[in-house]
Structure formats: C-alpha cells, structure tokens
Image: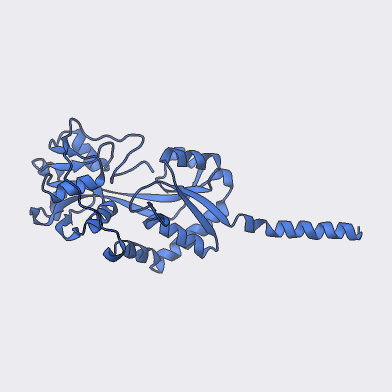
Length: 289
C-alpha cells in the first residue's frame, strides 16, 4: 500500500478534487431585457437587479456571467440546468418545481399611478378608483397592473383607457397631456423620466396599486442549495449596510444615465377592452418574469 506509484496517484487525485470548487467559481445566470432591472448595454448587462446580483457574487468570491435572453428561453435553460439560474423572477408553485428561489427579495416591483404635477390630483384619489372614472388612463397592452386596477378595468369603472406600445410611449403621453394618468412600474417610470430629464413634472399617487417581490432563482438541476443560502445571507447584509440603496441611487443619478433622444409623439389607440395578462407580458407593468 506504500508503493510510490499509489502514493503519487493519491496525491494527484487529491489535487484534482481540491481544485474542483474552483471550476464552479464562475456561474451563468440568465435574465431578460427589462429596464431598469436588467439592461443590455455596450459594456454588457447592467441595471438595478444585475448590479445587485453582480455585487453579491463578488462578495461571495465568485465570478458571474449574465446573459439577456427571451424569457421563455431563459426559463427553459434554467429548467434543464443549462444555466445556473435566472432573475428577476416571480415565485409560483409551478416554477418552484424546477427552481430554488432566494428567500431574500432581489427587487420589489411596485405598480403605481402617475399624474402630472399640475393635475390637481391628490394622494387620496387612489383609495377609490371609481372616482377617477372621468380621467383618461394610459396603459401598455398585455400587462397586469395588479388586482385593484385590473378589477376596476374588468368591472367597467375605468372606461377611458388609451393603449400604448411601450412604457416609454405611455409616459410620453402623460407628459404631452394626451392622458391624465399613466399606470406603470415605479422604477421603470423613474428610469424613463430620468433619461428624459423630466422627473419633476410627474407625481406618484399613493398608495401603490400593488407591490410584487421578485427573486433570483437557481436551477434545481445544478444542486446549488448551499450557494442559494450564501446568496440570501449576502443579500441581507447588502440591504443592511446600504449597498442596495447605493446601487439604486447611482442608477438614477442623471449624470450617469444616457438621455433619451426626443421622438415624435406616437399616436395612441383607445382600448376596446381591458388590458389582459398574456404569457409574455411587456412594458412597464407586471411582467411574467
């Protein structure tokens, strides 16, 4: 048993096994193009959620490769284990069958009503949406804005709705006085208004329509439960020490955001029926991530 060849083989085996964790030191995560949470840029993938994930993995001593994919493809790759995980994603029972969700929330997606500063609308107006029935609302097709607004639409309390192709067109319509109110994801609207340089022209009615937590989820095929636990602990630390708040503030600093080029005002079309949730929701509302 003390043969030199056996000892050499044992030493080599120990070296290989000892090096194995380093091979898993770089993780691949998928996301979707969803400003301001994840954004495709010349420098790669950036955005509020992307920078938070990158910072957390750096604290853990890991490298992370981020890839923007169509959402259905991102889900399929996570299901098969082709990627280690994906974000930002809403938790559902079906997804929990093949994904291990972070216990910590990666990002809160808050749905809000936006009005112009000179509209005269107050924070209390949101408590009864029916009271706003004479106002014109801007929405994006195929988007759910939460049960309160969706129910008001379905029950016919909000008959005056204009539909726009994107969140940015919706915000532009509000600024141009083509609608009285824009329904939007809070940070999506903030991102658009910051790039337009017109944040001071809009106010948010309160309370929000809905707050939806989104997560980082790891592929169960990859057996990364220990990494998920470490990520949760690190994300909690980042929230306590102010890192996540600093990422948010840095993103919305006007000096570091590229201004949007002014485009001709797009035309809107009246909504023939309430906007309904599709399998690939888009715009600045509640996506199916």
